[in-house]
Image (tube, rainbow, N blue to C red; front, side, top):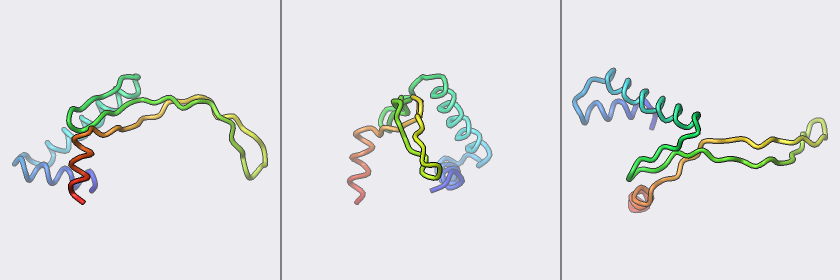
Length: 93
């Protein structure tokens, strides 16, 4: 399912025009990005949590040059689904 599909489904179910729904979806995604880039986690009850995780520094290999490189500690966004979300997905199988 793409963002366009989500916008179409929400517009059909709510009766709101697609441009308004698209603006809401874009705004929601923008706020989640802004919160995560600011180091703040986002919790959506019954859906899941968008959190910032810290990856530790590690040593890796550059295969083409046959050298060792160090990848510094860095932060990545992650999603952890809620138990209700996981249960609903498991029931659909």
